[in-house]
Amino acid sequence: MTAALSVTTTDQPFKKEHVQLLFEEPSCCGMTIRNLSIHAKKKTILTVDHLRLPKTGVVAIMGPSGSGKSTLLKALSELQDENLVHDGQVDITCIDTNNECESICSHFAMVWQKPTVFPCSIWDNLKVPLRKRKVERKEWRDMMKYALEQVGLLHELDEDWAKQRAQRLSGGQQQRLSIAMGLLKDSNIFLFDEPTSALDPVSTEKIEKIISGLGQTKLVLLVTHSLGQARRVSDYCAMFHNQGDKGCLCEFSASDEFFQSPASPQSREFIMQETGV
Image (tube, rainbow, N blue to C red; front, side, top):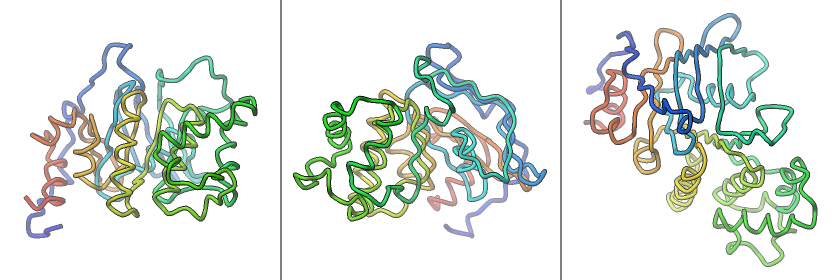
């Protein structure tokens, strides 16, 4: 980041027209967020007035630290901290209405910055979502192999992969195992919170390829600090920024348009600071 090129735009007002309300047709819209606000100890830390997301595609969520990017994912998936509360309206239409779930969280697959695998075998990790879905045991192995193949893991594992300890996998492999668990969960929405920030370039490329593939049939929300990653994998970009002591959505548009001519001063500042141009 080049401090000399930084332009202070934080206090400039947000214009609603910078948040393009795409996907007006119900057949295209997968999620609508209205008047969402998240609070901690009676203090508002994030607001989203109105945002429509597609049924399929990769949405890159960007912005400076503390602008509420990860908080948004946690709020959507009901993984919110007990000290945080949120209100507003979130309508999700890209879920399987025949899949009866106790919580909306069941419709999401969450992939964190640090891989979250259980300290047991690969088999025992992969069986968790299948048991929750009440899939018959006789179908487990074929479904597991398919999921591992989809994330490029099957050919990297031993023949007796079912007994292999998940925590003995590399960081990149563990992250792909987490994605495989999301596939077996049969989620229509994948939430990625900086999934490659701790990975080497080879592992990062593999994860990005998987994310792009998921976006062909699912809605993928990807929190990333990497403009290069957002350019490579995203179809749409949502920019968050700090307004005073809270985070706000300041721009949403198709990725091509966003990178060619960002509309909001906050987006222009962020891109300039990250690229130095």
